[in-house]
Amino acid sequence: MGVLMRDRKKFVNAFLTCAAVASLLSGCASLDRIPMSSFEPFSDNYNQIMFKFRAESASLTYPEGSKEAEATRMEWLEEYLKLNNMCKQGYEIIERKTVVKAASFVGIAHTIYYTGKCTDGPSSK
Image (cartoon, rainbow, N blue to C red):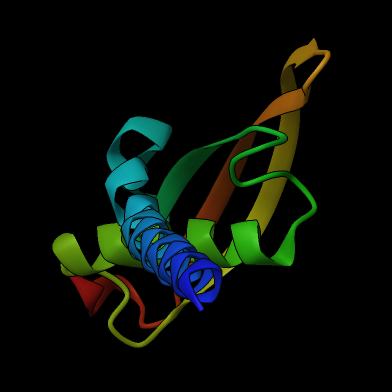
C-alpha cells in the first residue's frame, strides 16, 4: 500500500507540474508579441489605411507552415490593430513574404512580412 501511495503522490505532483507549465506556456504567446514582431501603419496614395506587420518564426517556436503558429501571428496583428484603433470593420492581407533568416541543426528561422489594408476605408482611424 505504501508503494501505491508514493506512486500516486508522484503522479499527482507530475500532473500539477505539467498543468502549471501548460498554463505558463499558454500566456507566452502574448508576451512574445513585442520582441518577435513589429507593426507600422501607413496610408497609400489613395488615402487607404494600410499596415506592415513583421513576425519572427523559428522551427521550435511559431514555425513557418504551422496553422497554430500562423493563428498566433494573426492574434499579434489583431492586438496591434486594436491598440492603434485601426481596421474596426476588418482587414485583408494583400501580401505575405517569407524570408529565411538562419538555418541550423535545430531548423530554419524565418522572418515573415505581411502587408495589409483595412476594409473599412480611410475613416477607420
